[in-house]
Length: 267
Image (tube, rainbow, N blue to C red; front, top):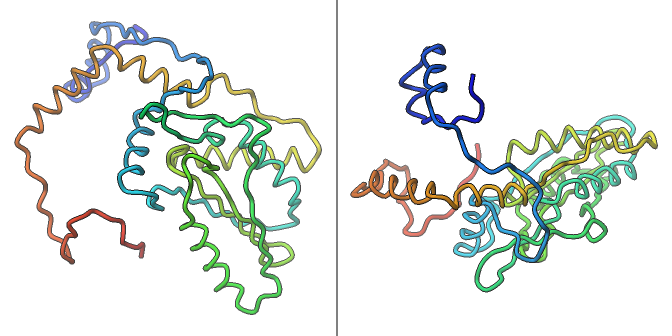
């Protein structure tokens, strides 16, 4: 079987039987994508296309909690708070994206990666053990945390709160801007945080392997791939396909506002 072959998405649906699809793979052309490798760190690190879209929306609409990713962990048992802080600092140290801010140079957005000694995880601590209305205060703190704005230029774009509810019960809140994370990455974060906390608590060395590439490397790789004729081909295809298309007229329970906003809620 060939490796690194470019297969059209339509071929997958046209050949649902695996043996037939294998014949397509054998006859399709080999992909000529550049390899993903580390790039030079400098003042003009490009954004990925997904980041550029979110950055553009933030410039157009202003700060919005619609692009915040939230994580709430219930921690039970004897918590070593210094070890937890150390583990969170190591998470930020490990992943450049969590030390990244965004600024304009000559009108174009660029990433700036904070140095390893420059940024630590911003963690606020609250103690609700003596509060009569502890559950109401917990909900208030969760709402306050989720709605807090991020400064994309100054950062940090990840923060958290550790809320002590009893002698052996804590709630850890972590909020991350979507520019530097996504929902899939939350699973990576929780797995690595667990491993790092155990190591910090027991005085052991960092158990996680070094990362060969970071997100800035992926952004540069993505742009190098799309710098060929692919981007123009994709743009031409969608412009032709969507030409003359009308916006969907979906029924709503309230009048649609003239300006799109996120004034909704979860039930």
